[in-house]
Each structure stands twice: as structure tokens, then as C-alpha cells.
Image (cartoon, rainbow, N blue to C red; front, side, top):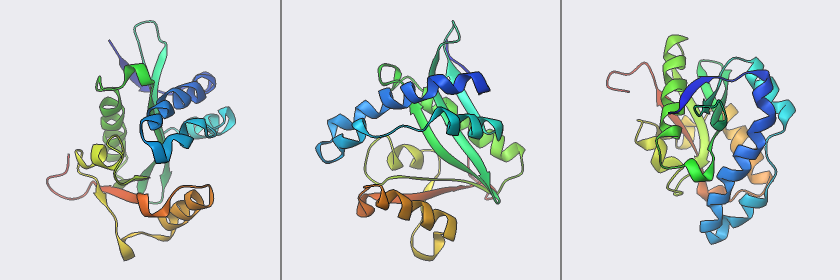
Amino acid sequence: MITIRPARSEDAKALPAIEQSAGEAFRTIAELAWLADGDNVSVERHRALIAGGACWVAADEEDRLVGFLSAGIEGDALHICELDVDLDRQGQGIGRALLERAVADARRRGLAGVTLTTFRAVPWNAPFYRKFGFRVLEGAEIDERLASLLGDEVEHGMPSDQRCAMRLDLNRAGTR
């Protein structure tokens, strides 16, 4: 049984290993396999995000962490920085549970939306988020903050034509 709970400062040291494990999935996509060898978010950055109060972990029966979602509040939106699940635990609904918890928290806070940047075509990226009602932002819909994030990603080697910004509007009828 998996429990989703708010992340604690002491959880931060376990999160880079989960990110590394999740990143191994990119080895199945030849042109993105290099991402599996990329840098992970530092323990210090995780601690800072956790201190902001918008990060959750997925823990097993023995409180071993198997996944996490790190986010921050940016204006009227909860921005998802990272969502990772250990490679051997993927496909079990853990990512879905983490995302549902984050969206519920954003609603509770009265935020207008949830945003993120991700790959357009990687199955566990944009197609996964679309199932929750996220939409790809195009042109003028991409605000300065998201445009800056996408630009930073390109500077760090991400292919610009494969990246996108997405948003889940929380103030529209019919969203989950």
C-alpha cells in the first residue's frame, strides 16, 4: 500500500535517487537517452521546495519513498517542478496519486491553475498530463515565467521543438 504525504525536510536526501531511477526510463528513447545520465535536483533545492509546503512523497508500508512531486506556488498557479516514481514502481498509479494530491492542494489554496513544462510526445509526459485535463499552451498563452523556464531548458540541452508548457485551469467547470 502506498501513502501520499507531505514531504518533510529529512525526505530530501532520498529524492535525487528516485529522480535518477525514474530517469532511466529515458534510455528507451534513443534521442533522449542522455537524460538518464543528467544532473538531478540537489538535496538543498529539494529542501527549499519542501520548505515552501507544496511537495509530496509516495511512501510504501515501511515509509520507504518510491516517488515524489515537487512544486512551488508561482503567482496564481501551483507549478510542478518534478514528478518522479522509481522505475520499478512505475505503472502502478503512484504518479497519478501524487498528481491528484497536488491538484487537490492547489484547489484548496484557491489557485487558478497548475502549470508545468514537459516533453510533448514522451508517453509519460504530456500525454500523461492530458489525461488529467492539462492542455499544451501555445503562443501568447505562454506567460513570461513559463517562457523563461522553457528557455532555460533549451540552454541546458533540451530540444526546443520537443518541449512544451502545460496548464490545468482550476476555475473552469468540468476540470477534474
